[in-house]
Image 1 (cartoon, rainbow, N blue to C red):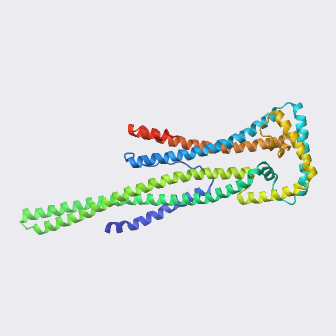
Image 2: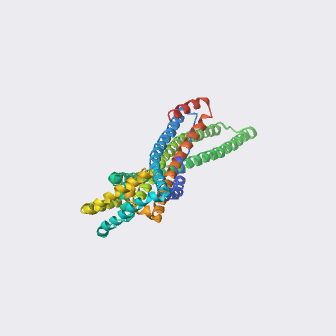
Length: 397
């Protein structure tokens, strides 16, 4: 206990030094565009339980990343389908596009007439209105999803902050244990030198002056025994503390890797959905959707214009079908783009931006899978019995 009191002040000073690192990590978390790196754990592969547990954690990360890849590929396929439709429209012969362009112009004119009365009443941008019209069937579900993602984002941030603080404390503990162990060694060396010097002096008294050294010798031996016992006991405690701290550190790294993967995908999903609806958060999306529904009730009263729009839309769909366009209905809300190249360029750019975001997210998750597989392959190459365990996990993919 005396030695632990001796190091207490030093440990407090180290924790104070570590605080800026925790603040730095917290600042990084505030930047939602940050690239989250996957960390390799420090595991004793000779320990069967630790090795199998580590392989299971790697396999769980692979499964989560693969699930994310599946969702991303589905959305990526839809965006790619829209781009292919644009290419079909652009490459269509001029004579086949005349009726299509006429129907598109008439749709835009009717929409202008309908929007004239509504523009001052309802607060939403043209981009938001087009998004509401395109995804009207799923907007309500997406609002709930976006709210859940935002709530989950706060939980993930808190988890990352706690894990970062815990990891910094554990690193401080490891440094403190190492310093205590070094100090014990130094004390042991100093005491050994003193004991040798004192023993030499006693021997000199015995042989040169024939002095009885029995009592001093026994006292010195007892003192050396007590000091050695204390030093050995503290050293044993330090080794136990180091093993426990190392395990806690590995656990913190494992949890941090899982949370970082969820954090990255959640941030990207939030960014994608906000970009999809041209809003900043779920509250704004709910407000815009409410404005859109009010506007729709106003539009329902305009029967004549609605009937004409329906007729023009049917013509538009038929012409698009003749061109081989797959997703025909969405062009009702984007009819202007059919006869205005600038609008079509903006739509194509918008789709390319969405596809790039999905591609980046897909590449990240694919990279996570590759890193986990590489780590498992690294373990596999070390011993034949490790290879069997790794093959069993990889065989379940």
